[in-house]
Picture 1 (tube, each protein chain N blue to C red):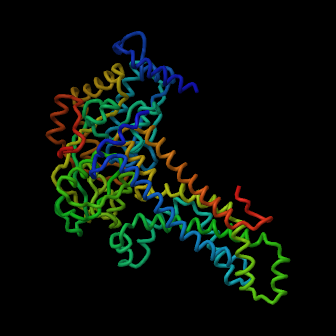
Picture 2 (picture 1 turned 180 degrees about the vertical axis):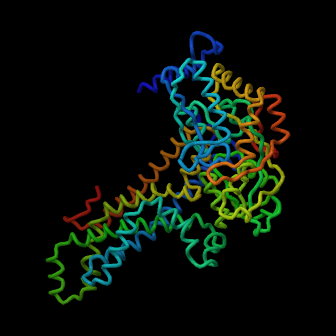
Length: 241
Length: 306
C-alpha cells in the first residue's frame, strides 16, 4: 500500500486528496451530529408519548414509529430529496431544490434524523416501561401528579437504563450517514469513492476510510462511557465499565 | 474458489504472454473463456443507443451489436459454437474495477478511450466519436457555458465529462455548484425536476436522454465541445491475444462496410423501446476513425489543461 497519492494536488478545487478526505470527515460529522440532535429530541418526545395512557397522544406516536422504522433508510432518503419537492406547492418546491442553501445536506439530515428518531423512541419507551410499575404507584401515592412522576422518576431512571442501547444508535447514525452519498452529499464514503476514481488507489483509500470510521465510533463509545459513568445510579445500573 | 484460481491463472498467463491468437496454448481471457465456457459481456442500462435495456430488460444497442460480432468470432476461434454469453450490468463507476477483477471480459457501452484509463485497461478501435456538451431546459435561458456562473450543475460520477466540466469551471472561475449523481438517468432527473440547471455529458447520450424525456421539446443540447470522446470496447490490459481478436473483428466490420448497417440501425432508424429515431448522421471524425481504425486515447481534462 502506498499512501503517497494523498499529498498529490487533487484534480479540481486546488487542495490535495488529503483535503478531500478531511472535507469528507467534516460532512460525515455534520450530517451525523445534526441528524442525532433531531433523532434524540423527536425520539424522546415520541418515546414518552408512546408510554402515556392517552390514546390521542399514543396513536400518532405509534403510527410514526411504525412508518419510519419499517421503510428502508435509502428509500426515505430518496423520498425527502426527490419526491417531497414535487408534491409540495410549486414555489416551496423550487425553494427546496434551488433556493435553500445545501439542499442535499439538509435532506440527508432530516431523512436520517427522522428515521433514527423512530428507533430512539423505541429505546426510550422500553427504558420507561422497564421501571417496575410499583414505583409509579408509590410516587402517585405520595401525592405527585403524573407529569411530576415523569419528571422526577420515569425519565431520569428510564434514560439511564437505555444509555447502552442509545450508544449503539449514536454509533449507527455515523455509519448510516454514508447513505447520504446517494443524494449527492460528499461525505467520507463519497469522497473515498471519488478519490478512488481519480487515483485508482481503491484499496488504500477505502482502508483509510475504514480506519477513520473506526476512530470516530471509538471516540463516540468512549464519550458515551464517560456519560454513563457520570450518570450511573450506584448499585443499580450503568457501571460504565 | 475455482473461478478465483482461474483468474489468477489468467493474470499470470497474461503477464507472460507473447503468443499470437493461433498458438496452440491459449492464454489470458481466451483461456478463461475456453475453460469456463462462458464469455461475460458488460453492458450499461441507460446509454442510449449504445448499450441499454429494452422493455424486456434485455441489453441492446450499437455497442452490444458490435460486441456480439466479437462473441461470434470467439466462438469460431475457440470452436465453441455453444459458448454461453452472460450479460453483466455495469455503471460508470463500477466498469473499470469489474473488468479488472475479471467479472466481465469486455465492456460494451459508452466508454471514452482516455490516456488516463489506458494506465488501467486497454481499448479496441474507436467505434464512435462524440464530445461533452450540456443539456438544459429551454426555459432556463442558459445559452452557453458562461451562463452557468454560480448555478448548480449535476454530473454522473466517474465520467470524463465531469472532469472536462470541472476543468472548464476552474479555468474560467465560474464558481459552479456541482452535485454528483450515480447514473445518467438520475442526472437527467435532476435537470428535469429543476434541482440542477445543466448536465454535462457526451452529446449523443444527451440526444438520447432528450428523445426519451416526457416532453423532449422542453430541452436543448447546447455548447461547443468541451472535450472529444472516442468510444470503444474496453478490455483488460496486457492481453495481446484477446485484444488482437477484438481489434481485427472491429476492423473487419469497418473494412467490409458492415458497420454502416449497424450504424444506420441504431442512429438513423426507429429504436426500442419508444420507437424514436435519433437521426444522427455519421460524423466526419467517425468516418475517419472507420477508415483508419485506431485506439488512440484522449487527455483527461477535455480541451482544458490540467
